[in-house]
Image (cartoon, rainbow, N blue to C red; front, side):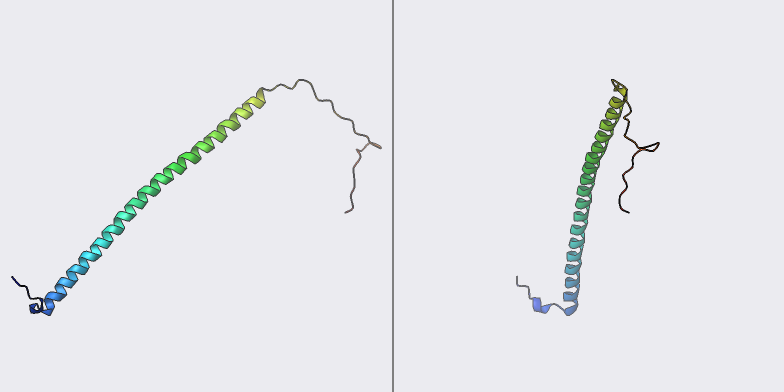
Length: 100
């Protein structure tokens, strides 16, 4: 069976061309939608990973600071600090004046 393409009318060519273009456009839109869904999913997973790491880092810093402050509050100073007497020329302490 021989099919003669030259026997088709111009309207048939227009319909077939339009359908082919519509299928091509729909395939492009479907591929773009799938790529968008994949990128959103990947960025969501990456966001949760970054959020977890930064949250853990902040929690660790807060825990370390809290234990440092708690430890500093428990430390007893072995002796009282004696005030140091500075040499003075009168009732006021010696002040170094610089050129202003």
